[in-house]
Amino acid sequence: MDLQRRLDELDLPRFQERVSHLGWEVRTKHFVVVGATRRRDAVRTAQIMATAWEDVGALADQWTDLHRRETFGVGAVSVWVVDGARRSREPAPGRGKGPEPADTIFVDLSDGWGSIEDRVIQLRAKTVDAFFRVSQQEQTLPRWVRTGLAAYIAGEQPASRQVQRLEPPRPGAGSRDRAQAALWVRYLLEADDARRAPRFFEAMAAAGVVALIEPAFWLGQPRTFVGTYVDYLSTIVGWERFRAGQFGIRHYCTVGLNPKEANNEELAEGVMAWLPRFALKEGVVAIGEIGYDEQTALEDRYFRLQLELAKELALPVMIHTPHRDKKRGTTRSMDVCEEMGVDPAMVVIDHNNEETVAETLQRGFWAGFSIYPSTKMGNARMVELLKQYGGERIIVDSACDWGISDCLGVPKTAKLALDSGVPEAVVRKACYANALAVYGKSGQISEADWLNPSAIDQRTLYEGNTILRGGREPRIETPGERRAGSLLIE
Ligand SMILES: [Zn+2]
Image (cartoon, rainbow, N blue to C red; front, side):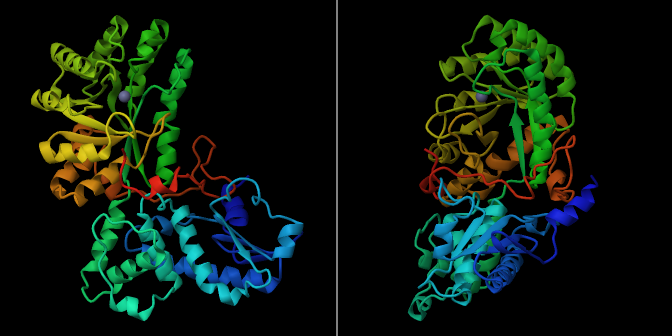
């Protein structure tokens, strides 16, 4: 099927209407509004929401351009205009069982709830919420910023006596109170001091992740065939890269045989035979994660073989340090690097903690810290380390793996550090520039990749596959609202 034609018909409808068994269906670029009541309700709802979408888009121009991509959020939001009677007779899809899908909005016009015209403010606010969900900014923007902006764009007016008492938000403060959040946003955008708005937008843009490096690692269960491992490597150099690009994020990876699986000799031998081919692919910035888990003889063998490979290909190395017997394992990893003649300036020792960092830095290696809830390193501890050691050769990274992990560990730590008085230059090094410096030695990653990006086109296919599901963006739920609103990773 001709892709352009299919997109035009299904995904980029002009203002379209039709009648179905569900009622009047009005489609705009971003909304599918189904009016189970009257045509007028559906059309008016679509108008109100399309306008609010434009308004939030105009404001969002100040900190992002993701929403200006041609295919951004096409058909992403479903809206049901229902009345109580209709709902009890025929519940709309997605309603009733389990949580309501994020991209579905219900407008209930049953008695006592008024008409669409009484809902303009509410609909506009819901549109802004949907905009943040679809653009995945609900995960990067603090909760009060999102609520405040929604209230601001919706036109919710704070009481006049509140406006007189406008106060700037305290650094790092969060508020679950809608009126307070609305006041803060109003203050930042409209207060006499004209410097405030740009700083506000800058902070929001800074919450965005521009690039990520995905290391090859253990998946939570050992792979038993060489082919499985090879397919995995293909995934991280191929599909993962494509997928991240579709969301405006540059993707890089490291390839390697992780220490746990190095203990399966047959698998390890097979993977080693394939590794050089993957190591030379575009976007591969290091050999890793390699190193020790239980510190066995086989782990030692494949660690050394991979260090040899890294040296041969002049690639940086990313080393996983063991969770058990960490201090000894970390020291030993560095000993072996030195023994093999690998330049410490090419090596990131990852999963450091308070006990290992001094030695890692003193011996000239890069010290990575994996921000990870509950184990390894929480971000409050990380902030203390930044205060103590500064930003030289320190790299803050985060997990996004098989366990409970927080993929926003880096921006959250950066924010917490800034709020805690760590100098911006230190934060910038530890959360951005250092990783770029060491992995940049591969010649495969540079700032220009995201400063001058090619345009996102979600119509692009990867080996015939797309990230789109029926034209919608998948919701990625952040477990636990409390955690989502908090900057702390304990
Ligand atoms: Zn690891």
